[in-house]
Amino acid sequence: MTRRARILAQGDEIVTGATLDTNSAWLAERLWMRGVRVLEISAVPDDLELLAQQVAEAGRDCELIVSGGGLGPTTDDCTAEAVAKALGVPLVESPEGLEQIRARFQRIGRPMGPSNRKQALLPEGSTLLENPVGTAPGFAVPIGQARAFFFPGVPRELKAMAEQHLLGWLDRTGAVPMLRRRFHVSGVGESALQDRLQSLVLPEGVRIGYKTWLPYNSILLYGDRSVADAEQHFERASAEVRIRLGEDVFGEDDTTLPKALGVALRERGLTLALAESCTAGGACALVTEIAGSSAWFRGGVVSYADAIKTEVLGVPEQVLAEHGAVSEPCARAMAEGVRRITQADIGVSITGIAGPDGGSAEKPVGTVCFGMALPTQTLSRTTLFGLPGRDRVRALAAAAALEWTRRRLLHLGEP
Ligand code: ATP
Ligand code: MG
Image (cartoon, rainbow, N blue to C red; front, side, top):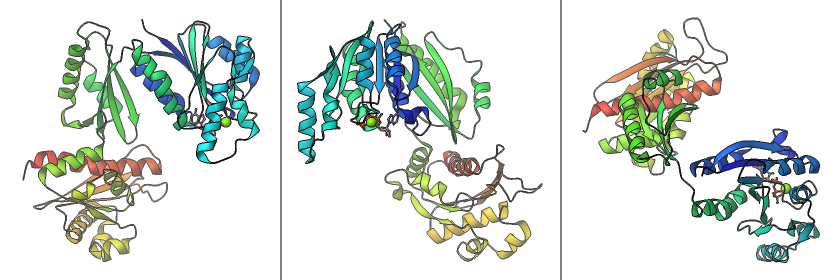
């Protein structure tokens, strides 16, 4: 049977927009992966009446309720009280809970205040859930036909407790995990992907989804494990996606673009260096996300001012005077310069107009030139990143430089 769930996030900070509700997203993904259908994610302010009402109603049509937040010692934390109100039961002090709170304060060498005693007050009939990483214990209690879990809001605590008390329990009691595969691309828009996959006939139980996470796009395949031959269906669909997208896919699942680029460089025994103008180190930051990138990444130069382009990278003044800093001749000279001074096998450069000012009719905001100095030749290209936004242009340009390099490497073959 497919289990259904509701997720409740609590706190004024969530409903006022001060804190982004990452807890619910984290929970939703993990529930979903276990075949639990999440019917709703809602956020409730620190309001006893509202919360009690939400809790009382949440059990009407699901088997699982998961709540985060409001278990702290302060007066705005009123979850236990609201649950007691919703169930029409009193709050009772849990001796075991009090002991856990006491022990925790002892371990961290701090005195336990009277307000912490409040955290051991649980609705009658509930089961205490130990908090392995913080003070506030959680609790589980039946609400209607559902089993409800109440966790603290601090993400680290919520995750540890959900792992220990909820996800493990789901796994033990017949969760049917979904099949999922993610295919990542960079520089191919969602609609272009859609067009290429449109005629794909998906086998029974397999669904497709799209996700944009700037500067990347992903295709998500989901497989329902409860249908017959689910895995074969799922693998067949995956193979079809791979054929249609080919080398546009830089990686699957947890593979990032910098990781894929690093693998391509390592396999060929080549090193890379970067010269960046408008991205000012953004591409360097991306490649050095990868532990061990020093094996293939030599370094980079942020040549923001024209003087740095000429003095450090050796871009001829004449190139700047004739073509400007945002030009393919300049990008080529930057790439060659950084390749020379770092002694890398490949030098790649980025120079563009991130905006909001500085654009012209000839070179509008979003124009970015790239250069690539290879052992035997130097290449260049220009891309106009259409949608405005300084951050966007910079993020897209940094990723585009890496993606261009990755694709170029695929055709270089083994040295
Ligand atoms: P505490 O004992 O720390 O008071 P609590 O159960 O009362 O725990 P909250 O006060 O609701 O939890 O939240 C504590 C902190 O956890 C918040 O200040 C916020 O930074 C973070 N937090 C709360 N809810 C969420 C959420 N839904 N997503 C991400 N972070 C959250
Ligand atoms: Mg709190």
